Length: 124
View (cartoon, rainbow, N blue to C red):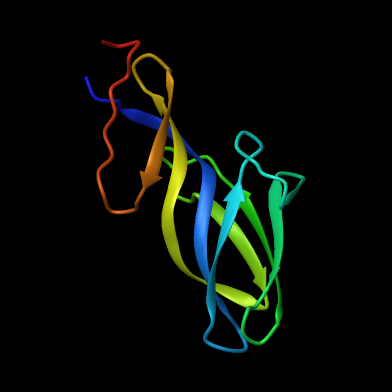
């Protein structure tokens, strides 16, 4: 049986950012508390990151607030960026909950527009 997703939440967002001053790009990874590393701060549910453009040394800051995705909301997160702008969402780590047994599963390298299926072991 495949996992019928009832609820999604982003555990790690990987965004390609572009500098507002020059055409340089860089990746920024925003991780939830479950998979967080030491290079970010979590404040009030928002994940805050700072960086600097490798080309023109423009200071970058970004604050990402993850959301729960369900039947009535398709918003994964809200992003506030200064000194840079999002260019692309790269393969990221999502968590999903089975609508049959409420089991949680990780969807690694989830891409938008591509079908992701996974076996829910508790339903098998």
